[in-house]
Amino acid sequence: KSFGPLRPVTRAEIATMFSKILKLNLTAESSPKFGDVKPDDWYFNYVQAIQRTGLFVGDTAGNFRPNDPISRGEMATVFVKYWRFLNIDVEDTKVDISDVHDSHWASEYIYTMYNAGIVAGFDDGTYRPNDPTLREQVVGMINTLIARPAFEAPASKFIDIETDHWAYGDIEAAS
Image 1 (tube, one colour):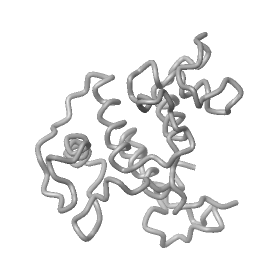
Image 2 (cartoon, rainbow, N blue to C red):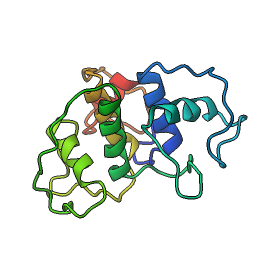
Image 3 (cartoon, rainbow, N blue to C red):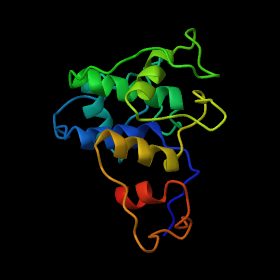
């Protein structure tokens, strides 16, 4: 099987991950909260549950956009809202990132991600807040968040991940 390391993670997938991390009640009766999330969608209960926490909000048209890639700026926002939901204080001191300025809508959230040690950005000093969050990136973020150590398996479970891939240990641990 393949992992798809360069495939963007969707908003529905992240909603599902955080619903599981928080062990949210997925069976609470409620009417659909978003116009584009239907009861027969695989992610319906996860989106409904995560919406109740405030980690995700819809757009101005009342849609969740479940199949849209989650941007790196949006990803930082979800992490910070997770900490706030759990009443965990994390420093939001400004960090020098070449492509994130105080005027960016997600700057405070991105600074917090850096201060928490969840991300360190790219080698060129950027964070790329508007880029989609990739599968190979999110495993390390989530593993760091929940303190899951990397796992150095002797062989990869995935045909598209070599043992020298930069996120190999995180991918193996998450799978």
